[in-house]
Length: 310
Image 1 (cartoon, helix red, strand yellow):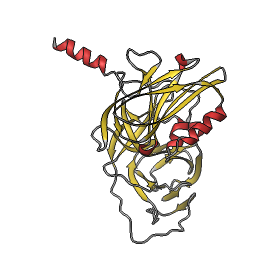
Image 2 (cartoon, helix red, strand yellow):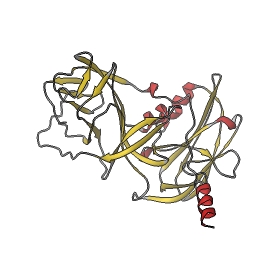
Image 3 (cartoon, helix red, strand yellow):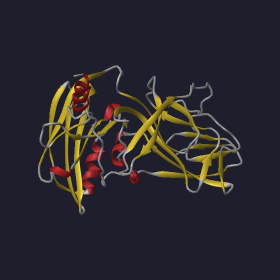
Image 4 (cartoon, one colour):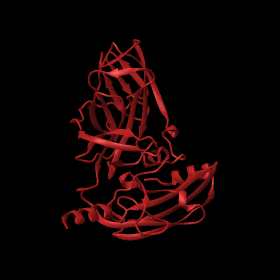
């Protein structure tokens, strides 16, 4: 009986894995490059406000000059168009921003580098997650770790230039209009500041699914977007319901913030033809959202994503 109970429990609460989607890709994001001399201390002031410290000797390569790539993802719009799901091993995440730090040629991090991620509304008790992409390109944020302690100094500089490298120094941010999440790492790659929704204040156990109508519904990718929390989750078939999608487990249960603007996006691409549907709603404890898909194009998809604003 005990074994049967756990089998039933597992079946009723099966997590929903994201599927492949050719319409959303990190290739849609802007990447900025910076040339650094790895034998010197370097501080990168990125185009959109991050500050990255790379001490002398922290990176090794077969050449003394290395091109560092930085991709910053601070808005829900960018998360959606890049297909960067906010989930950690199946658990929904609230995101406070993502960043990619990479190199254009073979390079390895030997010692700690650090990054300051800008924010205008800093949240407490956030963690930093490392991004791992599967063979379909879906991101899974894993291995949460604590953020470093960062406190503003009294010396601020509102004219601090961005999109540049300062060689020979490791500098802290000096900006009186932003706060920062600060973390250290010993590897290049994707990082996200956030927290799983479980245990967070303001999130309540809810039931949510979306029923999709229109042609071609069998091959759709369906997503839940909650802009205020920067939540972007892939849906999967809801158990026992035709053309209906759930967003955490297949029994349609999910922790949700209440009374927040949210969207269901449905899309697919087959032989260059795009199907698209979108519906706006306000979160509550129990609801079904109806979405109708129709023939569209990539330009309309871009317009729909741009409307998913905070």
